[in-house]
Image (cartoon, rainbow, N blue to C red; front, top):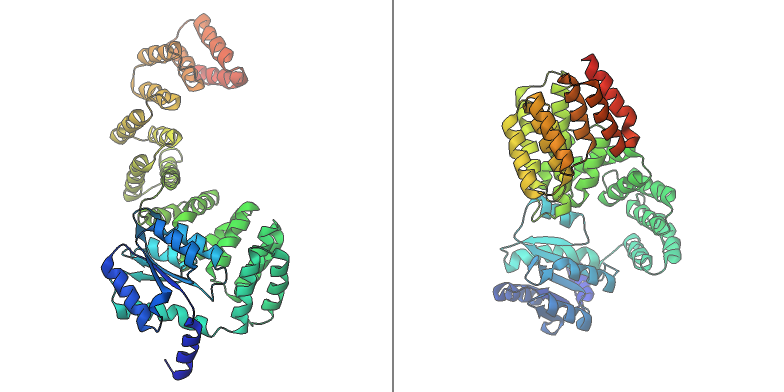
Length: 448
């Protein structure tokens, strides 16, 4: 670092306050040593062992920079980050450094796609920590007019949207490729719920920088909201080609891939899901549903449409459907879809395995109970299946699928027309809106 840069850094650091949030005494000492080595006076350095202390110090001392461990016993570092962003909206005057022992793609992508300035891997040394710290603060010590304008826009965006809009128009003129300024213009329009104008702003941002993550992400969301799914899919392709998959986006990315019949993308999102540390139930359910859709597509292509599917592909589909049943937390319809799909195949062991899992997890769910009757219909003799379906109706499981079994089996067994008509009347009484469907089932059964 030359003399001029050192002077600028010294001036920048003057009166800046720092907060470390670190339960380890050794790490706390290393952070303090690094900061003092970077010419920061001891009186401007504060420490917290946990989130509770950190919140108190944040309120009292208003530190410009925070260095925190990712793993805190009493909560998540994101609470402090959110509070810090509100306290210091101008990020040229502040920063946030995360210490983590997690170097997975999931962790790295979260940092790259957030307001965190740097991820420092544990274990670290005083020297390695200082090197990462200087990478954050040196550029902020000598910002360009364009960078100053951007931060002013960000600051006003929080409390004065009209002023922010005036400032962003000026900022756009200060750089030959003002992709960040166009992004901020898009965010201003989103605040005003002007989706078309926001879309134009994000598209302009990507003309200046086709791989700017923030604009890609927001444009994807806008296209999804406007139901422009094919455009959304093109953006999703760019996102996943250029960046690790953001786990928070997996549900929407998977949905648009399915909507555009790009089923192989689900394998990519499944791989990303496996890197997520402690995924929540919603993410588990979305992945389970996506894997189910993938498996259903492969199975239907082979067993319903007669397409030639290689054995390793069908086996992979089976494996992923099994995994879907393990991942799924609280969506019985996912299990229903898995079981109905597997009924098309000869994979009886997997079918039974997934059904057993479903019946244990959702013992009182009607859809799962109906599936048991349907599975029995597949393997029992006609008379046994008919009796089982009739008993299910008597027990209160009055569902259209069971009436369908009764109608088909009464015809197949050659029972008197009076009994067939009685079965039809019972079905129509329970589900009058399905009368035409039941009648068609009888016509087809009699033809067969």
